Image (cartoon, rainbow over all chains, first blue to last red; front, top):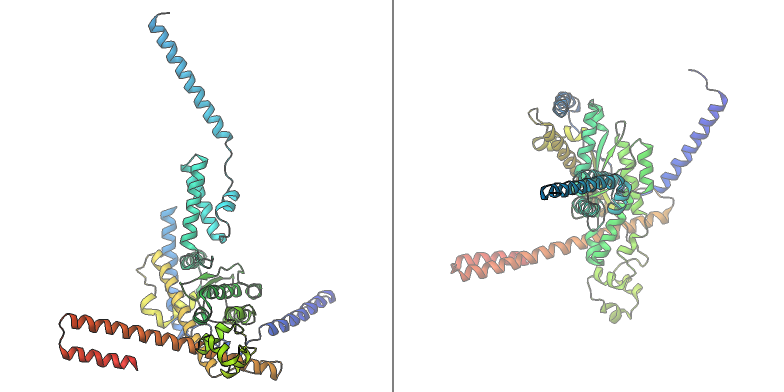
Length: 74
Length: 404
């Protein structure tokens, strides 16, 4: 690990501090009651890995199809 | 000069005049002041989102090739501008509509495929679906104009600076466009980022929008609990009751009906999201929207769009149900600076639940009444057409059930 020059380190410290202050401010702003909080915003995917593999084949096929269109247009 | 010679001379003269005319036309055409694109957009595309302005610019370029007369061109561009506005903008809220949302998502997915994405890149485009709670209450207890104001406040919360700031911090393009996705209380945005959008970013995005709306004091004007008419409607009595029974003392009336005297209505919005990745892997929409190898590229884009809308919609519906359950149970949590603030949150939950339940009960009663009236009309038709006594009896039994 290379040590950063003091100045850069100092700037980073300041940025870090700033970030912490910002986060605190945002937390205060984002205060909402529990009933409004959304626990899960995305759907839960079962067998994600196996499905992702299937999706990979679909993607290469789509890329080919897009290429075909580009060739016709070109 | 002979007559023949004179005719020839006149002919030459005529041709000369035509030549002069053509030269003049060419000269004028060259020097013609053309409408600048910026002026076209300023005149006919005011307040349109950037994408629609580009669409209008495209229309202008196409029309300019065909119509050389300035006045006719202006008319046609104006017509095109009107068509774009009618086709892609919500008339009441003056924000983009579902047709625009479709175009927005499809173009972002196309951009994504242009980059020849890997699996993880499918997380770079996400659709967030919002559903505003309590619009019916605002319309029924307040008025339709106030319902529109509530919708505008919700759209404003989604595109507020605070929410844009969250988007920016997570690398999401902050120039996302809020669309009214349906004629009711649904809104949506399609987000795009240069890196995969993680669930944490979407959570913060949604929560900030919810917080901005929840803390917007203007929502209290949408359903003003200091307005005797609103309070009387909420309590289910005539406004005269406040005057006759309580000597016009609104606070006493509120107390008698268990309405806290300083209660302020608050805005709540439910949401769910889906990235292209989630949409294509989601089981629930598999039969309907899964991409097939035999599909054309256009069909693939449409299926990806359908899947993404369906998945985010389903997640939103799930979250809305959970929100209503938590609200009814008064789950306020412990994220408060003191007991007063917590007390206020419990009160908000209790009142909001009452407002929603009241409107739902009213909705059910109206539906019951409509069904009953329809059945009575059916019985009349049945008897008129010479229906037998047994059939009439069955219908009467059904009517009795509905009246309970």
